[in-house]
Image 1: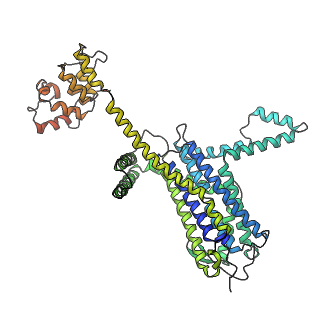
Image 2 (image 1 turned 60 degrees about the horizontal axis):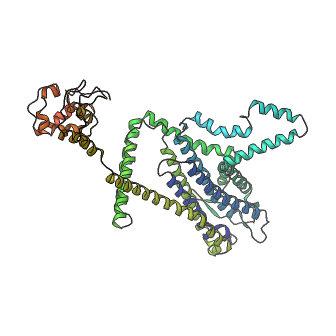
Image 3 (image 1 turned 30 degrees about the horizontal axis):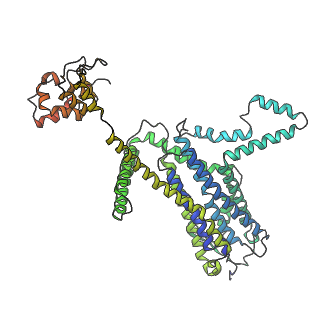
Length: 539
């Protein structure tokens, strides 16, 4: 039978679809910017909150318009059950902003400097239950509850209690607006979904016996399919109750986060191999991208080098277990964001396949009207935010390069303290002894222990003698104890210095006269990297 009434450009028109698709996909760009430094600040979280509220406002508008048209209050404008199913797919996409905000909230709490939340169910149970307890008044002081109870016995006490409850509700909404609006939107969407699938024939304008084809995870399904109806009712019933409908997504994303951290502690070697592989792949891909951009002249080499050095540092951090950062790892939260992108793309594919399979019955969907033009005009705001996000990434890279150049300029213009020390010795300062630390018999052993080659050169040219101390006999010993292989090799390479040292006293063993092929072995021996190394002193 002909389905001549399937066309509705204000719902499934190309302009409306393009606007919603673009708005949902561009909302991930600011997230990339905020995760660039692996930290989510309060200001960045607030920016995502404002973006999510804007997207949810559009989502509410679409659902409310669907309800109005389905009730027949839209005048000549009508909506069918087929277009309501398309609207519900778009609504699932629009609710993505709620989960983006939640993932970044988990990231922020896991990486904040003050008492980060651990990757454990008990800690997150308490963290998520805290605002609910405030809403229910569980955290009020006993004196406050007693006062409310006394006031309740007098006239106006009920009003006072209602005001208290209203204040708590308002405080909860103002503190958690994204979760509140996201939960209400899910409930409203579920109500429309149940209304549609309880009896599709009675929803909105009749399809006149037409049986359009929907697309579910890429597979075609007739609108009259009974299994599709049962699954849809079960799914929408699951997210009908406000507050409760947030629990399954929360459990899913937190489950990824907690399981990942649990696995890393128990399978460290496995994850180190994975980290190294990912780091290597990332470096190769970034190097290829950097080379292409440089060849095309789209990026200066200096900026690219800064990015390359940063990437190397990040890869090294990934490939080695860190003990300095006790906060939980958040890699699987990034996986959660990738899954959200994949789910959005899946909805886009399903919607487009649905419209393509019914294209012969909706020729007017390509007609441009007020609704489609308005939808594209409203797209200016999210596109502006996306452009701002990309600009912020570029500004951050420029800031890194600017900081490097400024630091390099200051270092080049700075007066060296090394030459000043040499000048003071020339003016009569005593450069031989060092009384502040009895471990060192002279200043040569001090600078050797800290690996200051430039200072050592200044002292040697001023005739400072390497006299034995309490812990060290020579500067070579102190350099080895400090773990400075470069300093050890430097001293071993100075023939005039080595000639003044008794080799048996220096190494504790007898060596042949040092030659070039033996000096590297001797330096490793001094550092304890070969059998016989002996100089290790607590710093």
